[in-house]
Amino acid sequence: MGPSGGAGVQGKITDVPGVRVGHQQKSDGGWLSGVTVVLPPAGTVGSVDVRGGGPGTHETDALGPTTLVSTVDAVVLTGGSAYGLVAAHGAQRWCEEQGRGFAVTGGVVPIVPAAAIFDLGRGGNFSARPDEAMGFAAAAAAGAQTEGHDVERGNVGAGTGAVIGRGKYKGGVGTASATLKDISDGGPVVVGAIAVVNALGLPLVPEASGEPGTPEQRVEPGTQLNTTLVVVATNAALDVAECKRTASAAHAGLARALNPSHTLADGDTVFCLATGGQDLDRSTEAARQISLITLQSAAADVVRLAILDGVSSAQAVTTPAGEFGAYPGNVR
Image (cartoon, rainbow, N blue to C red; front, top):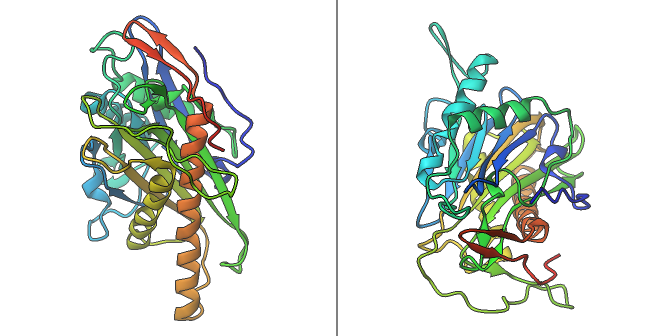
């Protein structure tokens, strides 16, 4: 089993200048899990919106609009459910070694929020889950990437053990981006997303009309635990409250891509990162509102595309725990 690494005709999160992504995974010896780290440039502002009923998260409270720190040094997406959140410690250690973090007396404290999907036991060994070393390696892999690098998709990183449709089909990592040309005088505003698709639901398949259709089957709740994790990034200059609102708006893309979504058994979480390279048009109150609405609408669009990309890019896997087939429908 290897990464599918598609061509990315719909763009990628690393189209946002300065954003890099690193994966680490293991898929043998009882393993089917991994870690994905999104590494933004220094000074990036961030926030998060958690909508699922069964989230596994770390440091998300620190990203609220009223908290002390407004910047984010890395975001960790991991397998291993709550156990896998220890991977954030490894990414934090890597950031510390690079001098990335909130300056305090004697050093820095890297701000590294994280969220996890449930993939325990999918490779056959319940105890085979990401640890601190895997988080460090994923962060280092991200740090070694060049500007605008391609992003591996499918069965990689945190998507290695992802499944959809109550465990029937394989899920994975997907990414997408969009460029907006009319909301900043300084140049194009880029919005990108990366998604780890591990959903209870199934894709909303486009029909001939181009409008969203319905899943091939209804999915009833069961013992499977699930989560779709998303990081949205933009080169727009946003404050923490605007990042929070953008993350909230981006959840619409999740609901457009999967049915059902945001269930009691899903831990659906969206982070938003704003690198600050382009100032939005804020010349009047009307211009400010239009700029933000346009940006946030684009965020929802790229999240939908990233999720569908993750489903399309995922490859079938057979492990001692069972068979997880590739989704048979055309979701693009």
